[in-house]
Amino acid sequence: MKQNNTVSDQIFYKFDANGFFMATDLEAFADYLQKEKKYSPHTLCAYVKDVADFQEYNALNFNQQDIVSVEYVQIRSWIVFLVESGLSNVSVNRKMASLKAFYKFLLKIKQIEVNPLLKHRALKVSKKNQIPFSEKEVELVLDDFAFDKDFEGVRDKLLIELLYSTGIRRSELIHLKLVAVDFSNAAIKVLGKRNKERIVPVLPVVLNQMRDYLELRADLEAVKDEVYFFLTKKGLKLSESFVYRLINSYFSKVSKKVKKSPHMLRHTFATHLLNNGADLNSVKELLGHSSLASTQVYTHNSLSELKKVYVGAHPRGGSNSKV
Image (cartoon, rainbow, N blue to C red; front, side):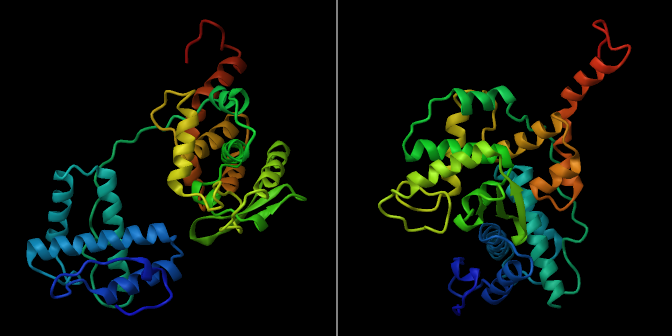
């Protein structure tokens, strides 16, 4: 495989004795996802791996090493295999999204004339409302929990505060750079999905915590990833798993909810804003959503609060009324 300076260099493909993987197609697909679609390295690698997995399945089960010209029945066979292997419908749908993107790419470069997944319908997934943390639960973590006053304690509390008070994604927090923090304007510049930048305001109390953190950060003996705002005590950029474990650890002390993740804090941020009167468009901009539909998924969590307001404000919403 030729070497170049793209993200595809970081992807490891499997080859049999005949080299059945079409490295050129996969490399081109990876470059397309990186340069044109602006996918993150994490998403890019996941897409390419899904395509590679299907290619391997196709070679082993249909003795066809070329997946450029396949029939839907072959893809359907893989779907059945994945489901019978215990993969959830959500995970199967994600793999199909990767495969569909690959065939759309082949259409674009005129490698094929028809997308074999053109009429494919995603597997049904039961919609589960994600229950955000309550204001009380967040308060217990941030106000009642005794964080250590050392570097790690101050960093941990700030990390939770920033996720909750800004609604930024875990990846956006990890990649937040020192130069992206604007103390004079009380804001941070965030690099979101598809490399889209947005400015997010920061509360004064959080800004003060950021200053305290930077003072302790300056005392670290070895800083290898100095461009990034959040670091480990060894001076390295945080990993996604590190942030997940941190959030899960602190909120497990105060909440019995099943999901205790960084994304749940983003979910909580949006829900609490809507509960307290923020308009949907403003929340959309803060979250960095490209469409209002993406933000509307959070509105169902505000229904209970809306019912309270409704009962309290309506002339016939007395104590004997039920909603």
